[in-house]
Image (cartoon, rainbow over the protein chains, first blue to last red):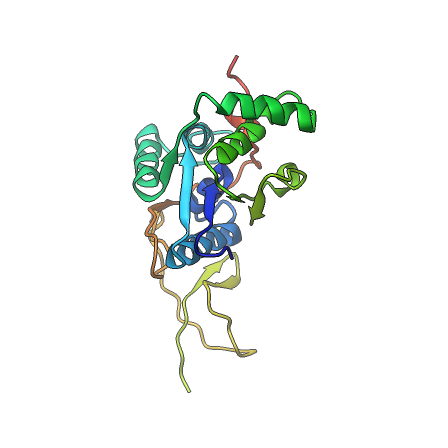
Length: 147
Length: 70
């Protein structure tokens, strides 16, 4: 668990697992319990518009879920997340952080989306990422993982 | 001695929701949850609205959010 003063950024996969009780039941329960522990420890929790867009695109995908969310359900969840977490923004400086990270880690193609999360975190002084995608983030030295 | 903890019954398994079950055997009472909307675990903290997706067709990755973007 993180120290009280730490900031934690929430990744899209965590929001998906927390939404669907029967997609990955054990991860669902883990997410809910971890959220509760973070809230009780007064940890600050953050998302960005990128995370909410990805959440919508995945939660409404009928190729992933037998019963995906409707657009009304998905937007209601997005509002719930906005009411619960602090929304951080990409700033003018974020693209420069992203370009530096791309060079440092030599990333290609769709991995830029992972790296944009890291750039947003760095630019907003957020130290920890709560994600189940540890494989792609483990090598990034600038952040710590919570999973 | 009787003690009650909260757990989820799923596909024949009982998954504790936080508390460890400190015995090898226990009598279990099952409460059926509504099929479409499931309440978040009754713990202090966040109260998220949850849904049942009816089953997993495949895993997802972040790329699923962008695969037909361009």
